[in-house]
Length: 261
Image (tube, rainbow, N blue to C red; front, side, top):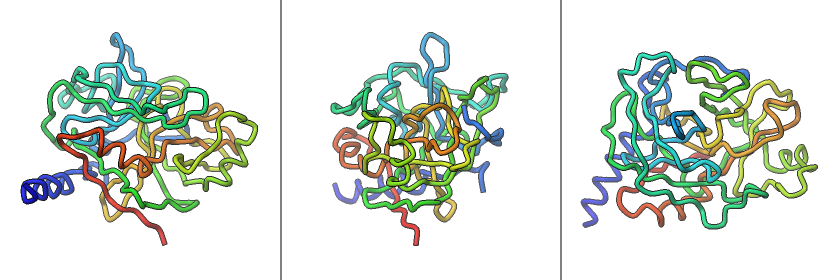
């Protein structure tokens, strides 16, 4: 039994976080095809709602405020081509039982696809940040999505630095109910101009370690889009490793430790 589990985990580690094309976002740019193969879209009645990330062949990670939808994988542009596109209905939706729409605490949800997907260069899982990972102020990170003030045709990517939690709370101190906790992570820049926006909720915040992409956060909330001194707040994935592991009992996603000296 241990040997079988070891082989499964080793296989996932060799598959996750690898993007062949990568050796509504504000201030971003078009992402090259295959750059972010774990990016998924959640659509309701044919309309795009938000983002998410593929974390195994049958599970998607997203925010709790978006969860009931058809999952679209492998989409690079609304105008096509659709050669790599794949859709799945949902078999199960499991959101954190202590999620609060008011405080944004525990804004995390797991979606089980109706059937497993085969991994390709355009559909592939991302690694998750392991429990004791740390992300210092200024850590270079990336966010992806189709959201924006005008909804771009092509998947967008933007590079943003991590903002320390104390600084993030200071900037958002007027949000009386939405306090920045240790289960959250923030990004800037302080000057504004770059951030997720409408339609990017549920999508991944990512960092790169030795050419492997690791998901550190889930797009959760902010005051407006890309406003100066208004960091965007994400659910900190590493703080929910136990909940994820306890929830996914069949094919557990792979995780990677990240520390920055």
